[in-house]
Length: 398
Image 1 (cartoon, one colour):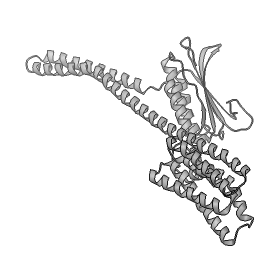
Image 2 (cartoon, rainbow, N blue to C red):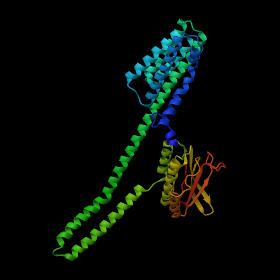
Image 3 (spheres, helix red, strand yellow):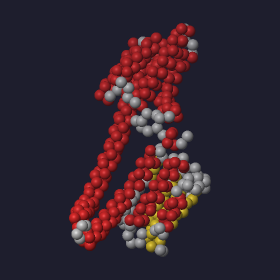
Image 4 (cartoon, rainbow, N blue to C red):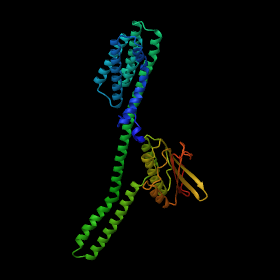
């Protein structure tokens, strides 16, 4: 199973069986606090019927709790369903605590957690203290030990309000993800509008001129073939220039840039569940051709890390260096994966090397990296280092 399948995004429903089990594990690990009711049932202090009903009640309570918290944190349930489930859990907690004893008061801790995980903050912030107050009231009315009651009050309040924080974080994460998608869509729309404006500016005049000269050549053809031929020659020249302008504009749109590829690398690695250490910026006055070569190489290297490395961490470094042959810009991509990425044909290294050759750049690779990107002797990981000469055109890099 690859890293992307193991990664469960905050605020996202699980997409596979493994993600379901991972999420159930994180939610179910808190069931360890149910040791007191389980021990109470195992001690044999109740009648056979009491023990059987206690086991049934505990199983039903745990099942309802897991279903409610698991489903609601993956995809919000209908408000009436949540309210009914909470009412059922509350009634079951009260019944079991009153009939079976002190050990069962811990169910109110899970009740408080359920309230914090499923209800809006404005409701949860008063209902969690109410649940805690019911816990204390039942404990005193039934003559339970004050120490036991006090020991459960803090976990109930802390667990409930902690879950309200988790719920708020999930909501914020979802809103941030939606905002990012909106920004990306707006950026794409802006690029389309800019391309439309540029093409209009480039072709509007040329096409109008071609139309006018075509009409003029058509009128000249019967009586003035030489002048018509001159107009046709002008049409050919204008159309060729328009074609050159369009190709130049499209090439500019298609040319990758280092800032854009750094942002894309950060997004791709995060989506694959790989911890990324990527520079925030690159120099904005790099020579066009070296920047394009490094941008293509970065895209290919990050793609290999995401698809083939099974890495947990990836470091991208971009630094200017002074050598005896002049100034160079060095790009390093290091991961802590299986160490095989980029060593077999078809992985893009050949294409990277060919692009580097056009700008007199160099490519070096090595297996075995530490988390910081330096070589290690473990044989794990892979490091890709590219350098391109820049002469005096290099600005500062952040």
